[in-house]
Structures are given as C-alpha cells and as structure tokens.
Image (tube, rainbow, N blue to C red; front, side):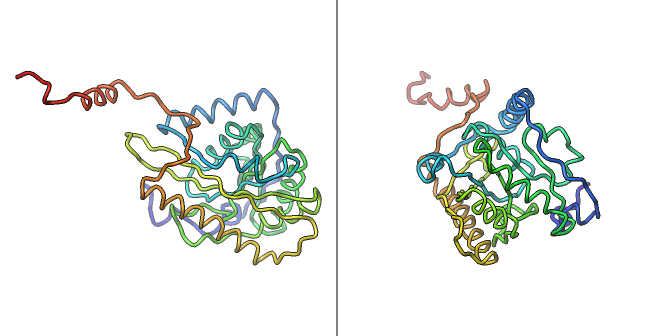
Length: 274
C-alpha cells in the first residue's frame, strides 16, 4: 500500500540513492521517433478524453525562427513528460530534448529525445547542462524542462525553481546570440466527460540576449513568478468555465453509452405520448 506521506520527497532520486550514473545523451533516429510518436500519442488517447491547447501562435509570432527555445513547465505527476513529448512533436513538429533522472531504468526513451541527468551534486549535473546547451544549436530541437527539479504536489505554491534552467539559458544566449523561454501551464481535470482532459496554455515568450547582464538568482526567481502567474491564470479560467481560445489536439469520440445518454437528453418529455 502506498504511504501518502511519502509520495513527495525534496531530495532528487540520484542524490537520495547516492547513484553515480554515467551520462547518456539522446539517440534519436527516424524509426525510433516514429515509434515514440505513435506510442506516446496513443498513451494520451487511451487515458484522456481530450487534449486542448492555446497560445500556440506565440511560438511563431513572438520569436525569430532562428532563435533556440526552451519550454518550461511545472512537474506535478507522471504524465508531464508524456504531455511534453506531444507538445514538442505533435503541436510544434519538433524533436524534444528532455532531462530524465535515472535514465538507466528506461534506456529506450533516449531514442525519443531523453538524456540523463545526475543530481547527486552540482558537479555531477554539469554534463547534462552542457549537453542541453549544445542541443540548442539544432533548431529542430526544443528543450522541454521542469525547472523545479523534482516532482511537486498538484497546484503547489510558490514555484521555487532551481538555477539549472537559468544556467542553460545564459550559456545558450552566449553561444548562439539569443534564447527564447516560453512558460507552459498544464492542468489535468474532469470537465463533462467520465475521463479527465488535458489543458495546456502557452505563455508569452521571454528573450535573453548575449551580453545581457542578469543576476542568476534573481532571474530564476523571476521565471518562477512568470510560470506561477500563468498557472494561476489557467486555474482561474477553469474555475470560471472560461475556455475561450482552446483548440483540440485530439478529442475522443463518445462511447456507445455516452451517445445514448446524449440522445436521451435531446428527448423533450412533453412530446412523449402517454
């Protein structure tokens, strides 16, 4: 039986278990990307009634197409990585690059764009951070990152980001001239269906230019507030049934018993003959 009091730990797994995991880069090929695309998309279709998103246009209108981009999102449950994969590959038609702790337990997902990170110490995590910067040189890649560093409870506040994303952004701007950062709010909720739905909102893009002076701690805190404000806005919209602007990546067809239910709702009792 799962002990609810032990579900969330503030210590990263590699540090908690004192694991010296060798760094493993991603190894994508057209065949394995084809497999991953269908597998991870199928997982969403099976478990969620629909996936809706809004703000996609900002990806194209608020940044130069030659600027590398980092998408950063909260990490509250197991599905976040699967959703991130579909955001990059299905919505933006790019390859994801995503850090995974203890990648040796799931080596095949390297074929989909994952690379390992060891959080045993700041020094142990450097290969992953440097690889993330290098990967930004390929504009077909999107770095999708969970800057809190560990899984937090749903709707946890405040967002306390680690400095890794700021380090990557700073080094990427220096190496390639500029980097774009886009916050992503993700919510899993039951609306009017018997299965949950995924709601995604993309926030305004923030640019960091080469030579721009920043205090790493202050910048990290500011990005945390940006992400928190976006997530709070999304939650407020959901509470007020404000779904304007969302479009569907997919929406599952109603099952037979739900179709019967919908048909019964269309029947006007006054028209039924006694």
